[in-house]
Image (cartoon, rainbow, N blue to C red; front, side, top):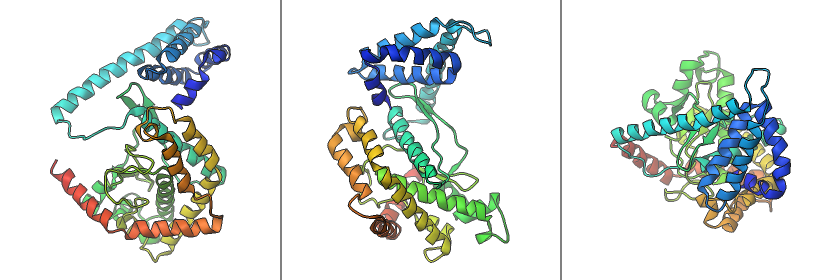
Length: 358
C-alpha cells in the first residue's frame, strides 16, 4: 500500500489529494491519523523522502485551515492531537528498548512493521475475496500500524500459542473443551467451535501456501478461545524459509487429531474447505499478482531482492494451467504431503528444545 500510495502522490495528483485530505481530517480523524502515519513512515525511504515530505506538508496545511466542527475542535487542535501520537509512540518505544535490554535480546531477527502490514493486508484482502463467494473461514486479519522503520503497533488478539496449549493441555481438543464443553457435541466440544477451528485451519493453510509464508512452527500459530486459529510472525514470504525442507503448509498431527484424525468426516470437511478456498482465490489471481507487481519497487526484502522471480513464484502457486477439478486434486496432494512430512516434525522438536533452553 505504501508504494501504491507513493505513485499516487506525484505532483499531478496534488489538486485531487487536497480535498481528500480535508474531508478525511474533518469527517474522520481516525482516517487522518492513518494517512499521516503512512506518509511519515515513508520518510525513511530515501527514494521517496522528498515526495512524501511534500505530501505531509500538504496534509498539515489543509488540516490547519479547517474550521471548528460540531465538537468545537478546529484544524489546529486536530493536527496537534496527531503530533502528540508521535510523542507517545516515542515514549513507548523507549520503554520497550529498556525492557528488551533488561530481559536480554534473544530475538535473532525481526520483521519490519511495514512488511508485516503488507502481509496482513494481503490476508485481509483474501478474506474479503472468500466472503464475497459466501465462504467465511473465520480468519483473524489483525490490524497493524507502522510508526517507524523499525517500530510499529499491532492489534492485541487474546490467544495462546499452540506450543503453549499442547504443553499445558496435551491436546487442542482438551483446551477447547475448557471453553466450549458439550457432552453431545463432537469430541466433547460444541459443533460451532469445532467448525470454527476447521474453517480457520483451512483458510490459513491455503493463504500461507499461496503467499509462501515460511518459518512456521507451533509458537507462531495461535488459537483463540472460540476455536479460531491464526498465524503471526511473517518474516519469511514467497517461499523463503530458514528451516530446511519445509512442507507446503503447516499442518501438525495435533491439528489433524483435533479434527478426529485423517479418516474422520471433519478432516474431510477441512480438505473440502481448503480446495474450495483455493479455487476461489485462483479466480482472483490477477488482482493479487498485480498488487505484488506494484510492490516491486518496495523495500520489502523478499520482494525487492528479485521482483520478477518473486512474482513468478507467486504465480506458480496458483497453478493457472489447471482447471478447477485438477486444482482440487493438486491441493489435496499438498495437504497429504504436509501432514505426512517427517522432517518438519523433527525440526519442530528441535525448535521446542531451543525455546526451552533460551
